[in-house]
Every structure is written in C-alpha cells, then in structure tokens.
Image (cartoon, rainbow, N blue to C red; front, top):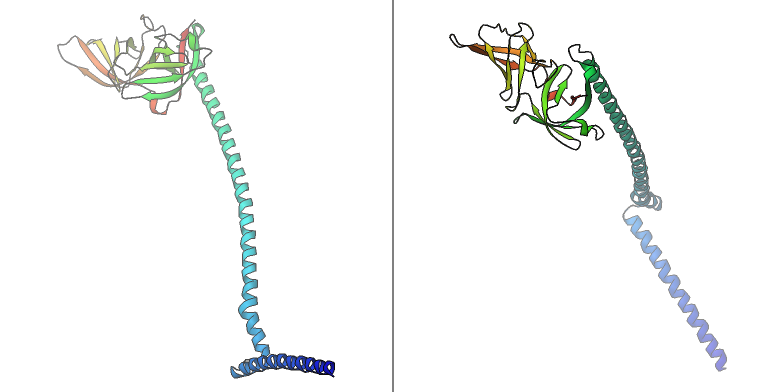
Length: 277
C-alpha cells in the first residue's frame, strides 16, 4: 500500500512539474504575442525588422571590410610596383648622368685637341673634376685620378679648351689645389693678339688687369689677350680673356685694361691640367 502511495505521489509531482513548465512556457509565448500585437508588429514584420537592423548592416560591414582589405592589398601591390619603377628610373638617371659626363669629357678633350695654337705634342693632359670652387678667395679644389696625380706639379696650367683658368698651387695625393687666374697670386707675361701689345696680366679678384702696357701701344675693347709663350712661366699661348675696359692717363708711360675670362667658372665641372713631358 505504501509503495502504491509513493508511486502516486511521484506521478502527481511529475505531472504538476510538467504542467508548471508548460504553463510558464505558454505564458511567455502569450505575453510575447500580446506585445507584438500591442505594438502592431507581426512576426513577419519583426523578422523583416531584424533582418534590416542587424543582418543587413552586418553583411554591409563585412562587405566593406572585404573591399577595404582588397583595396589595401591592391595599394600595397601598386606601391611595390611604383617603388620598382622609381628604382628603375633612378638607375636610368644615373646611367644618363654617366653618359653625359663621358660626353662632356669627350667634348672637352676634343675642343682642346683642336686648338692649333697649343703645342700638344709637347704636353700631357690630365682630366680633373672640380669638387670645390671658392670664388671669394679665387681658388678651386680639383680631384684627379690617383694614377696620374704624382705627375702634376706646382705651377702646372689648368685649362678649358684654349683658355687658362688657373695654376696648380699644391697637390695632396689625388687632390689638387688651384689658384684661379683672378687670384692676386697670379701674374704672367701676356700679349694682345689683335694689336701685339705686350704687358703683364695680374689677378685682382673677380677679374684681371692687363698692366705695364706702353701708352704707345693700341688696346681695343674686345681684343683677346693671351699668355706670351715666349715668357718664362708658360710655353703656350693660353687665352686669358678679352679686354672689357681700357684706362690710360695722358703723360703716363703705361696704360692698363681690365680682362674678363671667356670661361664661366660657375658652370664649370671639369678641367684639364697640363703636364709638360
């Protein structure tokens, strides 16, 4: 009898539990339906709203992230190709600069070798690069090949084509220090090739003066003054410049003239250093 009672109690308890669960479940469903109808929101409308408010934005965000990633990867690829193209341009530019330098050197040598007044059979020409130009002090620093540097001595002429632009002051291995012809340290015997007037050309800083010319000699603007090859300093008639101004005083035995070089030193990068054999 007790066993039957216990079993009945268990059945009743289980039934009551299930009924409570079913009641609670149905209650929540009923409340949910009431809420939906209260706010005039149907299940279909609710699902549509859920799709529009949550799912669609999520998909859009995902698509945007994917597009941004794709664009980022594409940008990296383009950047790499751009860097490669820029490097190729830089390499080609270096080669072009080298070709231009070779062309400039060949032109410089060609122009010099075509000068008839220079006794080139008695000369060696060493090519040098101007690495520093000090116009304030009328000096220049030139770099030459180490193989020929020991052949260059103090007093060697530095020329461009048929014009002299300076004289070697000292050498230190491959570095050559030059006094420009405008330097106050520069002086040489000279001659006006147009009128044959003779005198001395001295550096004044920024220009030269043709001095100690007899008043009886003729000097004209534009006349070309060259080194007097019969003098002791140089054995070739290098061009010093052209006359830009003449000054004479009546009763004085000598007249002077300002000389301007034919070479624009500001644009000069390569020169030739003359070495006597």
